[in-house]
Amino acid sequence: MSVTITFLGGASTVTGSKYLVQHEGKRLLVDCGLFQGYKQLRLRNWNPLPVPPDQIHAVLLTHAHLDHSGYLPLLAKEGFVGHVYASRGTRDLCRILWPDSGHIQEEDAAFANRHGFSKHAPALPLYTRQDALNALPLLKAVEFDKTISPMPGWKASFSPAGHILGASSILLEVAGRRILFSGDLGRPDDLIMSPPDDAPQADTVLIESTYGDRIHPKEDIPAELAPALQRVAKRGGVAVVPVFAVGRAQALLHAIHLLKMKGELPTSLPVFLDSPMAVHTTHLFEDHPGEHRLSHQDTRALTHNATMINSTDESKALASRHGPMVILSASGMATGGRVLHHLAHYAGNHRNMIILTGYQAPGTRGATLASGAKSVRIHGRDVDVNAEVVQLESASAHADANQLLAWLRTMPQPPDQVYVVHGDPGPADMMRSRIKHELGWRAVVPEHGSTWPT
Image (tube, rainbow, N blue to C red; front, side, top):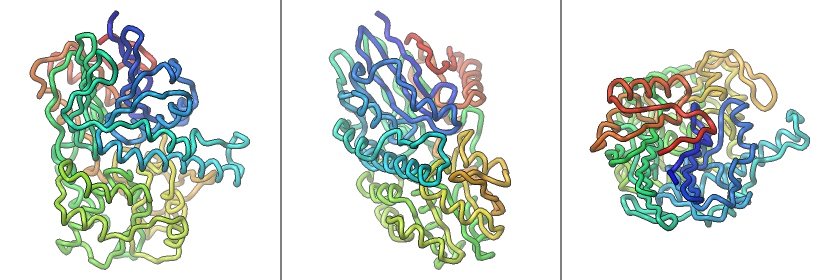
């Protein structure tokens, strides 16, 4: 029997990554992510998988971001009992992200029920914090560049991919086929993360294409961030910065620290990190010194140069403060979490600023704000947007199109087949075209739910 891949997510979209590899009745899932963004995508989270969870034998995770790992508590709740293999960094982050995800879903459902803006009565979370805690024992840590056997006859190895702590590319070997999953690749010039390792030899490659049609500007985060924060500080405003709790929050904290050290921002400018998940993640950088560029002094600065907000009461108290100040809060695309309350409170004032710090998936509030919309819907009501909206072009944690191609070129020999995944239709097709014409390799963009050979 041949080895096949079924694309259960991350196909023609940047979200919900799930790749089901099958051979002789054995099934392994690479990534197990939540769909985010457009409502029709989010609704897929509620659809049963075509394979019962108790018939999936193992899961390999490229990294901890919820669009790659956040479906796992539901998979476990519905019967999956196998091991979940991940790097140490990914394991540590999942211990933070999954319970937080369940807690936010419970909070959002409760808020919807209290205020009556859900079409469902009652609104329910996809899974709870307890469901997430129940799934954590399934995690098994894997060292980089060590070969493991997730089940008899199958081999896998993880190599650093940059992007965030623990992020990996995974080489899976089964029935004589070598399948390489890029995961989300970081940038060689990332402000805080080390560059991805070179790509190993493989027969089949799944390459992400988040920025498959984009080239990042040469400007770095501090250079782009400085004038924005200088403007909002000068007018006494509040900068609300939706951040991804893992990666972008720490990059922005480091950038602000560098700007204060250089005298480009006043050292007295208050900075608040309002996300328990981001606070816990920031402390993890001290536990994984080999995966990032930050010195011991830099990692200490991350936790000492901002006020860490943990409790809900502390978060609410920020609303009584006056600017200038900077509030970093999750989530990065403004899809949920505490940042929604800050946006609802501050978006209407022209002195304030909303700073978007990374890719904004279509259908998210972040994408709505980036488009210049004059209002955004939050908690069932339309909120006026009079604040200045700034989108940082330099803050992405993903490799751009040229960097993705450069990574593919590090392979010792061309693969037989490339599948272009984790990209919206335009960027994915542009990457497919460049792979075909510049590298001369076979490349396709698989459709959601399709099955292909390796």
